[in-house]
Amino acid sequence: MTSLSRSLQQSIRQWIDIDHWNHPFGVTLTLKQRIWIDNDRGRHGITLTPEDGSRNLRHFLNVLNKQVYGSSSRRFGKRLPVIPVLEGGGTKRLHYHLVIDCPREDLIEHFPSMVIQTWRQTLWGYDQTHITPCDRGWVSYITKFRDKPDFGQSIDWLNCHNPH
View (cartoon, rainbow, N blue to C red):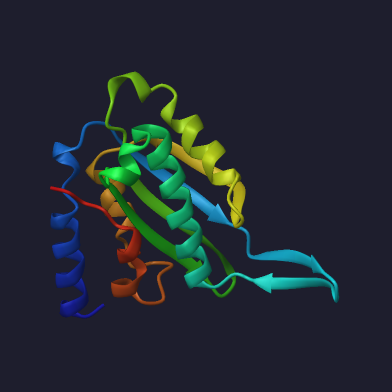
């Protein structure tokens, strides 16, 4: 890796400061690589693109935000803090590693099942998921260079929300 890449990695790791988050969870969400659509011309397969994955993640986060914040998610733009990183491609299944903050004590126990159930209900959501409380070690893991064709573009900036 070049010194520029290492500098970018270090800056991103500093920016993802979860020390002030309430209850951060490390989340892995795997995507279906192909879906099948039936229409009047028959059955057609659609292959996943990174853009499809990002749209699917946005939908997932919108639904999860609504579950956590109710109508305030839409009316006042209340959103969960989240840092999503896309990995895979080629021969490796596309998947997201995320840090998501659980903002309320009363949700901590139920939060993992909320995340998993919501993900599985999305169009591209695949059954392989993992969620566990996390710390800065998870941030280091998701910002590794391996399994990212372009490190700078691996963070899904369109779905990123880091309020601190």
